[in-house]
Image 1: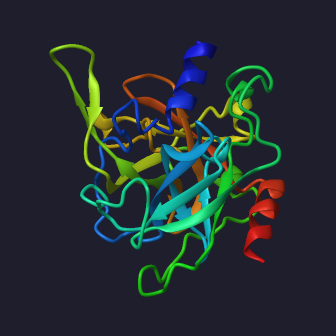
Image 2: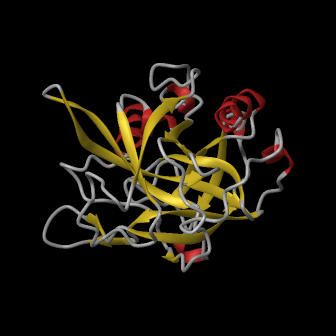
Length: 270
C-alpha cells in the first residue's frame, strides 16, 4: 500500500511525454468562478537542457506569486503559468509564449518525498511550493486572487463542511479495449466536495476530502496536484495525492494554514 500511495503522489503531476492529462473528477466548467486558478508546466533538465516534463494546477496569490504543491516544484528548474480557462487549443503549450508567464519554482524547505516518516506522510511531508513569476500578471487578465487562511483554520472546520476543488484536466475514465484511461481537455474545472472526518495522524498536515461522485462530491486525480481546496476564496490546502487509481474515496491535500508554512509563503508576498 505504501508503494502504491507513493506512486500516486508522483504521477499526480502527470508527465507530459508519457501519460494523459488527468484532474478534477465529477467536475463542471469553472465559468469564471475562480479566475486566479491556473495551469503550470514545469521544466527539468533533459540532456542538459530545460524541457517541459510535468504539469500541475495552482493559485495566484498576487500578481507574481503562484501557489502549488511541493512535489510539483521539486526537481524543476523553471516553470510557466497559464491563467486562461481553456488551454486545450493553445499552440504555445507547453513551451510558453505571450499567453503564459515564466517563473522560478521554489519548494518549501521542510518538504520531503520519501522516506519521511511512518504511514501516509512518509512520501509527502509538507507538500507545498510556489512559483515566483518574472513579470506580474496584469489586472486585465486576473483582478482577484486566492486568499491565505488564518493559522490553524482547518482545525475549526466540522466534518461535512462544503469546500470547492478547482483544477485543469479531465473527469472521464474511458473503459473498454484495454486498461482504463483518464482523458479530457486542458480546461479549468470546478467541483464541490466536503471535509471528511477521521483525520487520524495525517490531520496535522493534510486536509481529507470525500470524493464520492454518486453522492455529488467531486475529487482530484492525476495531474490536479497543487490546485486549491477553497473555502470561498480562501486556500485551505493544495491537492497532494489520492489513494486509488479510480480517484474515488479520499483526497488528501497539504494544509497551508500551518504557521511555518504560512510564514514561508508570506515571505514571497512581502
